[in-house]
Image 1 (cartoon, rainbow, N blue to C red):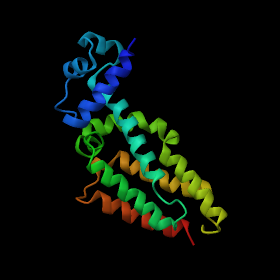
Image 2: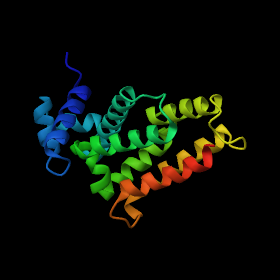
Image 3: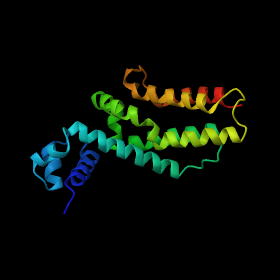
Length: 188
């Protein structure tokens, strides 16, 4: 028997990816999943609620793919900049991930949902690993603790959750500048 929740999720993923959030409606998701519209509401409260789940899954998958293809042994500054650059590149090519930057309502929903899940993300796990690695390699300033370094990177998450409030035409450059500054504080 087909798992209807999974069928709806996969249908929504496909439609959000090919058509975007606004052009996709619940009836299309249900039809593509091969279920009745009423069945949709047994599993999801709204199109927005389903989108948040699809976005979170897609975001983690893309970031895991990026991390798997990056040389984690390279110097910290080029490593972090490469990861950031690739995140933006993949985001620009992905209709689901673009919603983070183009739809303030969805941005707020995703941010409120994901604020509790930050510590479970692949990026958070990677940062913990990298900070420990940099400390072991003697790359961090003596007064810099793992907790303090992680707090600096966590601050970027807060900024990203509120990126729609920042008045800039080049958000990528803003993040690059902030990371460059942070690394000068963290590293020798």
